[in-house]
Amino acid sequence: MDAWAYAHDVRLISSRPGKPVENAFIDSFNGKLRDDCLNSHVFASIAEAQVVLDAWREDYNAVRPHSALCRIGRRPRWAPCGSTREHT
Image (cartoon, rainbow, N blue to C red; front, side):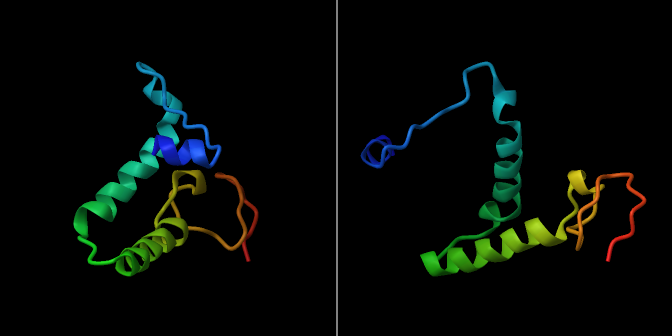
């Protein structure tokens, strides 16, 4: 990966040792992806992996409850938690 990053002028950044909270959001996402999808599938091809991961992504982004949205799925129009504004 280092060679690819160098060839494409990409700088790799890792969290510093002893500072695990620097990547808390991506670590949470990676854990959900691994637990919900990757650990339960053995992909026979890239095409199969694409189909399964696309379905998981759609579920993750549109269906499953998110804490930022008061533990509900995606809404037609976003409003902060506790908002009394009607959604259409």
